[in-house]
Image (cartoon, rainbow, N blue to C red; front, side, top):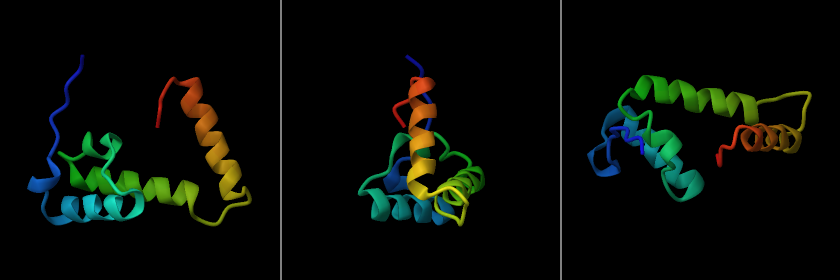
Length: 81
């Protein structure tokens, strides 16, 4: 099994702590998809922004359709996220 070093929520500070706090507010917890990027908070921040832009920003596609596309792609890639 692969193991990736991450920054624990209790040890997070600065930008990383803010990202973790935002995740807990949105989802009630910090998912591993965020934790695996925790060693590089600027990259994690960019990843979160990309997610927001692709799922929440104005688009000719409805949010529901965009989420459906994401689910189909995730399932096709055998990814539970």
